Image (cartoon, rainbow, N blue to C red; front, side, top):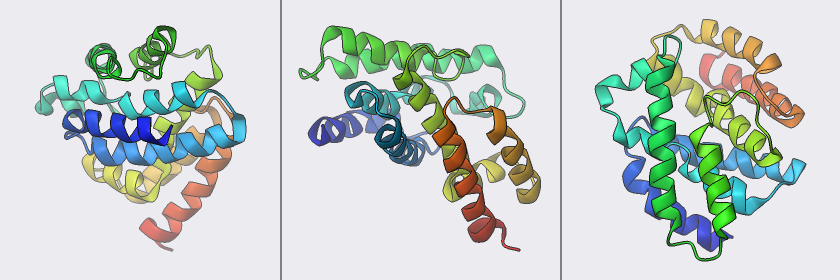
Length: 191
């Protein structure tokens, strides 16, 4: 599994050069591993899906990124990164012989709706969606988003604290978000 993940990170790297996506993916991957350890689920679906979930941003002009996600986002523009991402992921996954065709299709299905899909149908999909969102709750993710959206840190913290109650699909993700917000308050905001 480690060898496959390393290969996927290497193959995805050229597509993760925008939007802090390399950092975002590494942090989201760590959360996906933590959630998978708690909840179970198939690593061979979860890990490739989280590593490849945002490769589609590379297909969208950088000047459109802040219009495609965040507080005032255009859902149609955001949707493009999911569709393009699933296509790019399918190409990257061609070289992964340890995965069945059905697994590759499931990974791409998750990527194609990781932001827009409101009703995840598998545990693996829930973990990918929750790990992706948890990035915002990490000290680094919080700092990146507060800066790029030009929002007051305390105001953003309060907003995330409210989101944490209803935003996640799994209870462990809610617990992790709460723990991360304490770290953000200590390390980023300071009291």
